[in-house]
Length: 142
Length: 142
DNA sequence: CTCGTAACTTGAACTGTTCCAGTTTAGGGG
DNA sequence: CCCCTAAACTGGAACAGTTCAAGTTACGAG
Image 1 (cartoon, protein in one colour):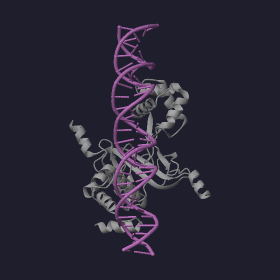
Image 2 (cartoon, rainbow over the protein chains, first blue to last red):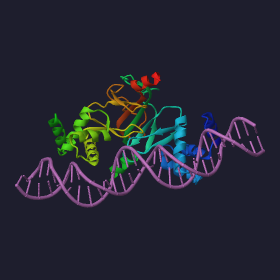
Image 3 (cartoon, each protein chain N blue to C red):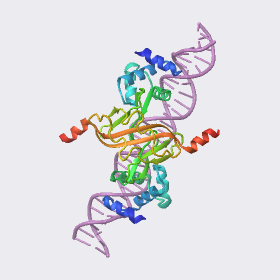
Image 4 (cartoon, each protein chain N blue to C red):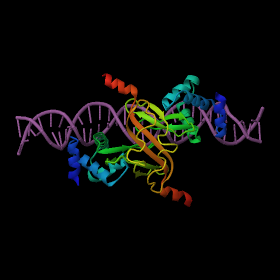
């Protein structure tokens, strides 16, 4: 429901606008989408939204913590609705598809490095690289 | 020594060329450098090397496994000489500096995801995000 | 030494993202 | 309830990092 997003936006002291609601709706329905896809999805609803508006909205939502930005090496940025758990991602080297995985080890998996070099660590990001089932099948079928 | 790199290149059935040796030398002396820096370092030795050559060399060395490409979200690609251990990285959100860390848990830390979704996983990449000592000090000094 | 091909040079193109100046609009104060 | 102003949006241009393409050079097998 839109009103749910409205509450979230207000809680983050962000104005409730159509583009923002459309972006949140798009992310609710499609996980791990890149900016271009978000733009298309938003325009399906609001045809006149500029690409710049989507970039602005995504940044505003990301800094507000409502949305999480994922940026696998060598690919465009992707976004997902921020859910409470700090889960990780499986990325297919072949087609780029992304799947969610829960933390491997308990609640804070590798959150503490063996030697922090004096850094103040606030997040441990884990990316599993591999080949997704579809790409594996396609390859063996060749 | 250069001859060491020569052996490595030949072992990967890559031709031994000055640009390649220069890139390897630059990476030996400077950890976690971005492409631009590699270009400068190489040109200090061989002024006439094109940026394209450096890009080509870095890609060839990366696919050959002699060099490892690191690509922290939102930053340009960085490179380091591939060493045997699969260590991880600490990245400073403020200045972008990178430090090495050994695997947190044993030899293959989080290498096995809790649920692999049918993916064939070949690498688990861990990035610790935080603030480096220098940036922490600078901030508290303000 | 000769020759074929991998590697290099030069220069332009491309993608994802950001910057900028001007216009619109959400939503609190009067 | 309406007005006003900062926040948000539009359109268009700029930018950085990387890659593509066509032609030239030089490594190293024979």
